[in-house]
Amino acid sequence: MQEFHFPTWVNKFTLMLMGGVLAGGGYVATCLFVATHPTTINVGHRPDQPVPFSHRLHAGQLRLDCRYCHNTVEEAAHAAIPPTATCGNCHGGDRTEPGRVLGAVHLTSVKLEPIRESLEEDKPVEWIKVHDLPDFVYFNHSAHVTKGVSCVECHGRVDKMEVVTQVQSLSMKFCLDCHRNPEPRLRPQEFVTQLGWDPGEDVDRQEMGAKIREERSINPKVNCSTCHR
Image 1 (cartoon, rainbow, N blue to C red):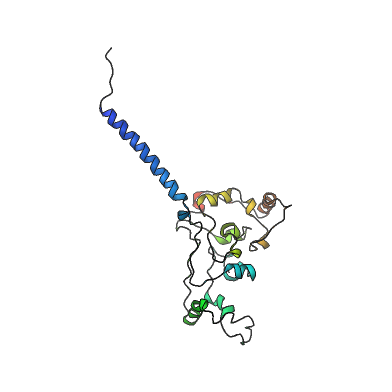
Image 2: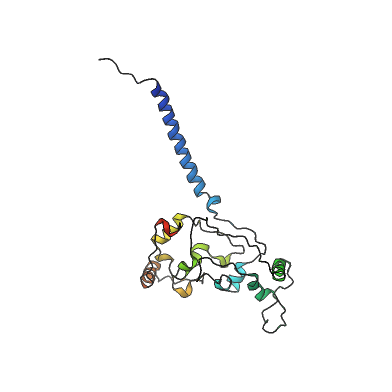
């Protein structure tokens, strides 16, 4: 029987195949690295704002409710950036005017100059977005807030932040983990904006969440079209 030999082109093909496998593996590894890198998912992102607004002071020490500034969060998809007039309720006007008992706080502060200019020129302050989802992702704040998902689940303890920082990846995995197991993240509606709320050590968050989920008929979807529309 004649001895069989592979044709010489097989050697080149084998090398090309091995090179392709290595290149493909390297490509996948690079994609995974880039996709999970903190720079990509923006964890730790904390831009300097035109006005050094302190959530630690306003939401923490003064205990302003989140909805005082973000007043559309229960009714609209987007949590509204407050108009300068909201800032002006405390930082504008004359303390001697009727009804201005709390007015004119730090009225001459250099840090608040952009606020005064905005009020005088009727132009909005150009705040820099911190939690910025891709254009192909749809997220509805009201759908979550009105079901008992607290602001803290995505934004963290902003009441302790001098400068707001992104603390969650807001990746697809982050969202799906919550949609598949929402119970630990649900709380009574009246405590949604109380960021430091603690139900107590004797309360099982999973059991409490399961009860809330049943009462409110919460059934989060995980199909693609839920978030990608």
